[in-house]
Amino acid sequence: MKRFVFLKNTLILTTTSFLLRMIGMFFRVYISNKIGSEGMGLYQLIFSIYILASTFATSGISVAVTRLISEAAGKNTKRSISSVLNRAFLISLSMGFLAAAALYFGAEWIGTLWLRDTRAVLALRVLSPSLPFMSVTACLHGYFIARRRVSVTSGAQLFEQVIRIAVVMLLIDRLAPMGIAYSCVAVMLGNTLADMAACLYVFLGYRRDLKRNIPPGPQHPAPHPPVAGRLVSIAAPIAAGSYLTTILRTVENLLVPNCLTQYSSSREKALSEFGMLKGMAMPVLFFPSSFLSALSILLIPEISEVNALRQTAKLNRTVTLALQICTTMSLLAGGLFTIFSKDLGMLLYKSPEVGFYILVLGPIMPFIYFENIVDGILKGLNQQVSTLRYNVIDSVSRISMILALVPLRGMQAFLFVMLFSNLLTTYLNARRLLVVTGIRFDWNSLVVKPLLSLIGAICAMAYTVGNAMQNGLLSQLSYVVLGSCAVAAVYTALLFLTGCLKTSSFARLIKGRKP
Image (cartoon, rainbow, N blue to C red; front, side):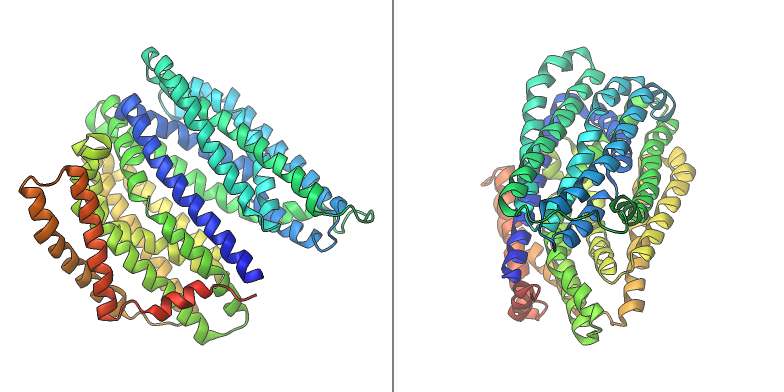
């Protein structure tokens, strides 16, 4: 039964993640067509501040609630569970209102001194009311994870996206003629109303779940030690790490347009380049990560379990399986982005510049995906302090290089910084994984055979679908779709022929976590 619930929840989360990424990517295309690349650059700057504020409002509380609700559920009473939620609401709402006040009253200062663009001020103030609602949603998310009822939070995320899209589509054509600032206001108002709607959705789900599935039971005294103290003790270390990494990332996002402005002497051009990269190209490049996130959900609990039981041989097999599937999938994604970069830029954004960014970053996507999977494995091995340290090293090195290189070479330098950064963090995480587990990488199966299989698949596609495209038999969209399917099919067949993939590996993956 536990295995069934685990796999069911994994399927729900995977499907939701895929739908949200797909909808979000095409929604970004819609927005970019409405507000242009400069507007997307301003949107990314505003959103960087929003992420920072939301981190202060929500970080750590969801995990803390999950742990305490799991403990309180042993009593299976409304009072024991409600006591945790009530105190969590109080703490998180305090943080949410504090973050909202800081964002609202500091919007002019942030827009003038941090973003160096006063057009962001009104949009920041529009975003501020959403933060207390995000705090409550984070608490309830932790509750439903503890109750193993992820369908409610998944439904809330889809409902939130529907509201966001509806509001933006309703307002953006009315506000866009008033300038980029009001176009961003339309988008941010959609975010605010969507956060409010999602909060209402999960709260109603919480009330139904508390009423239907938990008996009243006897009245229990407040747990000891006090719930508030335990919430803080669990949430504080997680929040501290999130604050640090988010602050560093925000500093980086604010520095890049300013350094690009120094290089080009044009704020408009700098925002346009920043918007095309961060707001248009990167969402496309990260779209396949929803599949790898599903693999993490399936494999990381098993890694934690076998590590706790000191089953070294099984741990090494599981880690090797995770890395094998990650590299094979990420190489395919990187290859497809590289060969279809120009076509994707034109089909999605009608922009050769976006296609160029996809072309440059496509080959390093396997490193980014690999780093994310290894980061998750290390956390499953209780190495979160190491991953935090590596993230800080990465952020500090990125900021230093941005300050030193981007004013001299512009976007070319920033692309180099991204390349160096991802190679560095991949190396640091992989080295730590080798030290902790003692496994040896089988480079032949991990890299050489998949890479040769990918080259063979691309050549086969070029000889068939590529020739049809050159002869005018296919449209650009048909070429991308049929070409991607052809590469994926031949690549998968070659992986099985070379022994990189085996049916036994998938059987082990589907088996999932034992109860």
